[in-house]
Image 1 (tube, rainbow, N blue to C red):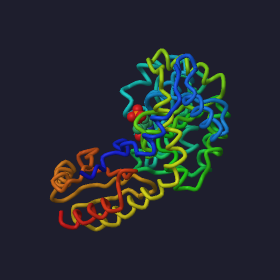
Image 2 (image 1 turned 90 degrees about the vertical axis):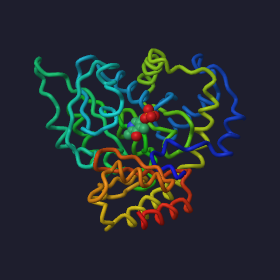
Image 3 (image 1 turned 120 degrees about the horizontal axis):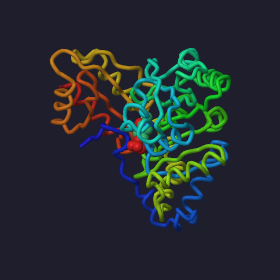
Length: 337
Ligand SMILES: *Cc1c(COP(=O)(O)O)cnc(C)c1O
């Protein structure tokens, strides 16, 4: 099977398994796991941020960030298709008791002007706007990337309105590679950043939340409340360290594969709009003789797994476990669909 459903389906490589097997471990709830401590210190240094917290999932790092930044009744500003709103089970309401202001963005990205308009005035009737959350790359935007200037402009609005700025950077490394940007740039502009190790980077489990020392101290308490305090988590952290060393630069290959597939689909009579491919995600509209579900079923008959993310849209995601040979097989299959 060629599994293009998500970049979460990767299996650890032999090198990664080796690093995991040989990891020194301890009880991380006592702060005594050397591998977790090493990963947290490494990530904080990479972004030039004060502190970091290793968590089981990106949902947890985002939710801990939202809970730590807000008080119940506060309002979080984000794009309408953002993961924190659409795919975290209503966690903003459940975990933080916070309200949400949704912005209709451009392929998952919002502008400073939109944020400025979404900030509530200081009026006892209105929720207090305390947090802006961006997503880069934007998953439902088809892996779209922000221009760094636009992020800086949003930061200015945050500073003027006493709001914090959080980044859901589940696929931040894809954006960094695509746009030739650095972790440090992001560390300087965001108050907190969540990165996933289990997406394009190819580890089995784990995300890291980055932020100021005091913030991460509070976040560590919330992680415990959420049940995310893990014991000998160093086996997982070691996979993360290995991935950050070995699997970042190669993301460019996934981006090239997504681009090749977009070119193949272009002009096929069952393909409508293809969102511009900027990173490892390919989102396209299905039209004519197939619904998205039917086309996904046709792919499956040919040993290719894709996801129908809406009645009219299919998503393909490229990752570590998709070889150039598999890309060629997929291209050949499309020509005879
Ligand atoms: C995958 C993902 C997350 C986190 O998901 P988990 O499965 O909980 O690790 C967060 N944001 C975006 C945009 C994602 O794609």
